[in-house]
Amino acid sequence: MRRPIHELSGIRTLKARRFTDERGFLLQSYTQSCLLEAGIRAVFRQAIQSRSRHRVLRGLHFQWDPPQDKLIRCIRGTILDVVVDVRPGSPSLGDHAAVELSETNDATLWVPAGFAHGFMALADDSIVLYECTAEWAPVAEGGILWCDPALAIEWPDPNPIVSEKDRGLPTLASWLSDPRSQAFRLSGEKP
Image 1: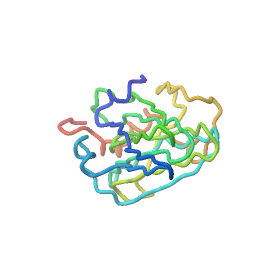
Image 2 (image 1 turned 90 degrees about the horizontal axis):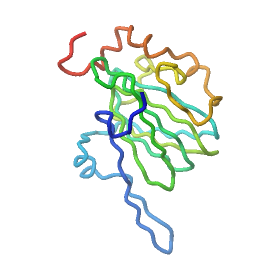
Image 3 (image 1 turned 90 degrees about the vertical axis):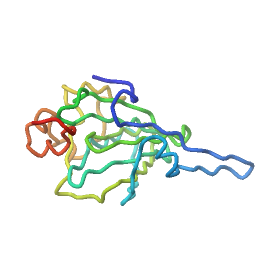
Image 4 (image 1 turned 60 degrees about the horizontal axis):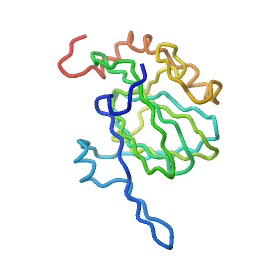
């Protein structure tokens, strides 16, 4: 089920501060104090930047060991960013939310561990910057199939450009049957 972004527990959207004058602008992506005010206590360990053509879809990805939270901004172009709750025991398990991020709306998205994340580029040369709380661990990365019918995500283009790796991701049901999915179980919940 699609939900408004604020209804998925832990997901936050933030607005970067833009200072404009005759020279152009300066954008303050975030400050630690603003993150703390939003309930985000993060130490970033890695920054990743991707560039995508129009209609490229990346995702839906996550990392379970070590768990990886992400702060995401589109610094050029426009993307539709989608998050899916993959936390066993969550009342919103399998639900998703979507938000448009662009170079002009100054929006930043906080995606905590336990959510699959992906996006579709809505413009050529869309550049996305991810700041991550854990370094990439290829043996502990996973994902959910972007077109899993159970998710009912309405992507802007039904025939996106998708990598072979992402075309081979499991459905949410398959992932939840894998014991590794329990790494995201909500605290206090038992399998």
